[in-house]
Image 1: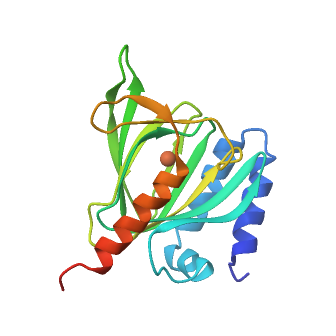
Image 2 (image 1 turned 45 degrees about the horizontal axis):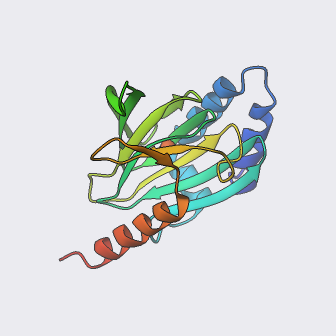
Image 3 (image 1 turned 135 degrees about the vertical axis):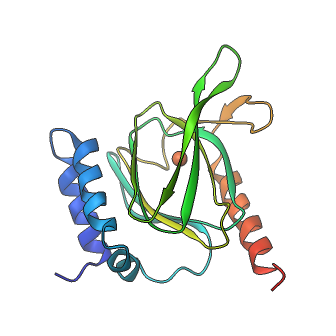
Amino acid sequence: MLLDVDEVVARCRTARDEHTPQLAIRDVLAELVADADAVAAALGPVHEGGIQALYRSPDLTVLRIVWTPGMKLQPHNHAMFAVVGMYGGQEDNAFFRRAERGLESAGGRDLVAGDVHVMGHDAIHAVSNTRSEYAVALHVYGGDFFDAERSEWDPATFEERPRDLANTARQFTEANAAWAARPR
Ligand SMILES: [Fe+2]
């Protein structure tokens, strides 16, 4: 079967109804990104960094997230499980846990094409693209990504504040402009 966006979403929706949706979605993404070229063809070309919603419901969100080279996203949580399936580039993850004041480091993981990473509902991570190519991945969440009470933390002071998606959109805009204006 030719892979397309509808098929990607359909597989995720079926997995969401499984007894252990987090693991079922992990398996779906692992199978998909094992053929990164097929995923890239299904989702179409990348012109700039950003968040593209492929499916949104109260219990499932499927996004394509493209991290622009140089992009750094401050620590944040999701308040729902999240599964990332990389199909191009590299996404550097730093993990944190809540500390008495702010956050403390809890390791990291650099994801490359073919990698799948599962995060529990209370995971806190920061993401950066330190490479000179777009980092592209499917991000699947066990709720409505755009309508959840979540937090982000100031990257310098680790002060907690409500998640601000409008600010994230501005960060993408700035990173895209800087990348477009890079010396070549
Ligand atoms: Fe995240």
